Amino acid sequence: MRSKLFVPGSRPELFAKALASGADAISFDLEDAVPPARKAEARANLANFLGRADLPAGKVIIVRTNAPSSPEFAADLVALAGRRVDMLNLPKVDHARDVTTAVVAMASLLAHEQAPELLINIETPSGLRHAADIGRAHPRVAGLQLGLGDLFENLGIDRRDPANLHAVLYALRMAAAEAGVFAYDSAYPDVEDEAGFRTEAGIARRLGYLGKSCIHPRQIALANAAFQPSAEEVARARRIVAAAAEAAQRGLGAFLLEGRMIDPPYLHRAQAIVAAADP
Image 1 (tube, one colour):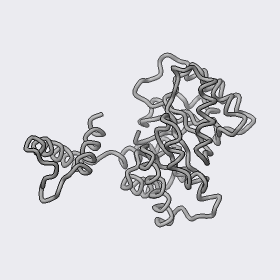
Image 2 (cartoon, helix red, strand yellow):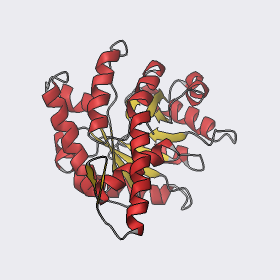
Image 3 (spheres, helix red, strand yellow):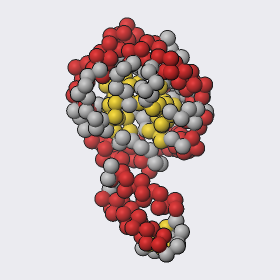
Image 4 (cartoon, one colour):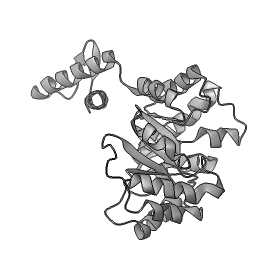
């Protein structure tokens, strides 16, 4: 899921185009991209579209609902019942109990067999402080997604300062690691600023993030390139995996390859790179 394209639920004319794009995942949005007066319309649009039998199997289909504390949340779940949803993206989550509340609502409003994974937005100081607890609040939580717009803009934090950006990305990455879930990067609001997008994506990728959200199709290729292992990385990872197999046959847990010590953490990273290159 190198790239995830947001599509407003109030824009059904964009749904099929989004699925035909190069994005690894499509996130249909019922929250911020839809004004209050059009929430019901957006739910109906999405329920109709996701009920189709010809949705492509190769795309991850995500729906960003309204916040679990919102009166709109139950209506979102009712509209999605029986539809294909691979993952629910829950916004405005501040505490682990918010996840628990959402899971209880899902259990009562969705069929048992329809149990999508959860991608949790971390977009408030409280959410960031409790991120590790949020990530392990329920086995269905698959990842934590940073919401820099809500977090930084409300506090007057300069997003273009690399120190500010790195501090928050690092904090969330460590929380996700503690919880045993993936970390996912925020959307970048300036569609014209490709250099800025690459800068943010590069920092996130070097911190071990899975991918980056996109608000416009032109950002998809940038995200895919940023989070795709390079040919050199893949080739080295394959050499590590092959050498580890030989070392294991000799009863070695650590060994030297090309002058560098390789032990389990480096092997695990190499295996992850190979798996990403050969899905």
